[in-house]
Image (cartoon, rainbow, N blue to C red; front, side, top):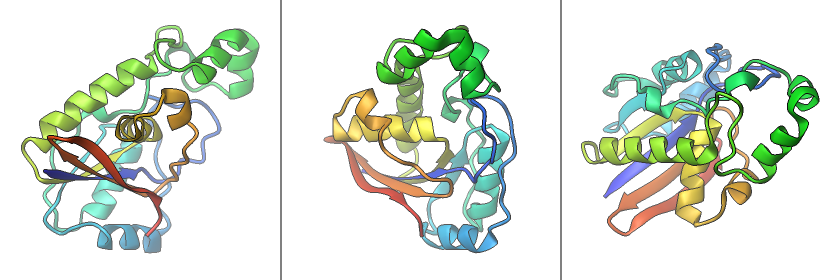
Amino acid sequence: MSRLYLVRHGPTHVKRLIGWTDVPADLSDTAALTRLSNALPEGAVVVSSDLLRARSTGDAIAAARERLPHRHELREIHMGDWEDRTWQDVDAAYGSALRQYYEQPGDAAPPNGESWNALSTRVWETILELSSQHPALVIVAHMGPILSLVQRAKGIDAYAALGHQIDPLSLTTFDLSQGGLALEGLNQLP
């Protein structure tokens, strides 16, 4: 069995769609980072998405824990042509497609972007690979990858999963065994 500690990166304060857009995290709340680091097991290894906001958060909470190479498979969902645009701009240009993407997530994808199902598949395959090598993993990632695991663990559809809140610097924990994925804690703020 493996224990997974999913951490959402620090806040970005960006008010645009920033799936693969590489923006920094605000890591000025050192007390929150210390509390989060202290809530994680000392023997766990730390891996993060290769995007700056996740890498820097992982570095800030790793302490003496082993740091694995960054993984691009843990990135946020790719927003394609919607990347780095405001909601209003995307709605004006792609209104019905934007609504379908969020109201009926699954196979719908932004132009030149990624579907929810594609995100879920790449994240799950990476989790299985990493957990086969490490019994305790701290994974610093993004809201989409975390919610894809919530969806799998709870056996709910993507629309219901997207209704869950995942705050910056929050901790969501799972147990992974041959019986499947079990959600143990959701959006906890140590």
